[in-house]
Length: 376
Image (tube, rainbow, N blue to C red; front, side, top):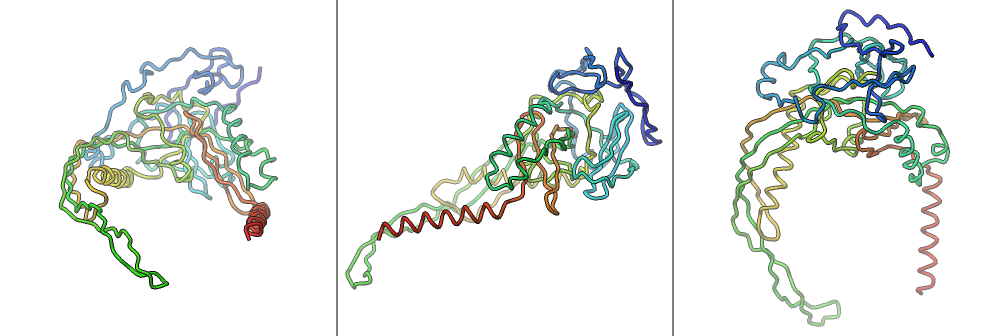
């Protein structure tokens, strides 16, 4: 049996509580996605630990947004474990490690330029978490399949063992709720057609149907509840990739935060603060509200849409969502592949082989030329 390494000196900004030792060898147990349990990484012992509030949604409260914006201190709680923060000097992501874990390289970009990061005292503790459900073995298989479907990727990329850089990371997310009562006005357009005469290039008289629009005033009311509008708080993972692997089932499967879930995993400290996230969520809600209003406008088209919206009961949560991340460098550029750690949805970036693109374009031109030749 391997002897677990000694615990490092975490530092003065940590809290020395919440350890969960293995009953067999004394090492810290870690959350295992495949077994959905705490497992010793050294002797394989499976713990019978169970969160007292493990039922999805139980014990998870929505926080009043207006109060939190006025007094951020009300959202600060103890993480319930020893913490160590490091900041990457390349991508600027701040990672939080629970208990004995330390990092040699940044999990987000692979850079070795990481330094200790002193807690500034403004961190909002996560209230709830979506534990990893998809194991690393499952994700490696899914990523390999994803590689094989990238037709214009360089052959060297497809044969590389890129999944060796696979990391499981809990990302910070904000979720926002709000009731909206909105009144809208617009001009509704109704298309109609009239027959007109015209002369063609030969001077012959022809007829055609010409579309016209009749405009009429329209108005309506929308009452809607926005539930768990997601705003990522991450700076380490590319935002466009995160949007592609969403959604996370935050409405049904969230569990109250417990340090046991994050043992053995990297947790990113949020880089988008609450005021900024609240503004972003409002913009998202406004965009969705506009689409709801547009669907109510009668007729075939519209113009001059005006919306007067009143948002009430605005609440939020700070949660942790699981992702699997692969970061690799090809040439001089860094690429990422992201997988939803709960659903397995994958999104990724990859370089392109310009030789393959050129040959494919050349082949397409040859086919077009052959078709045109036989059509003459």
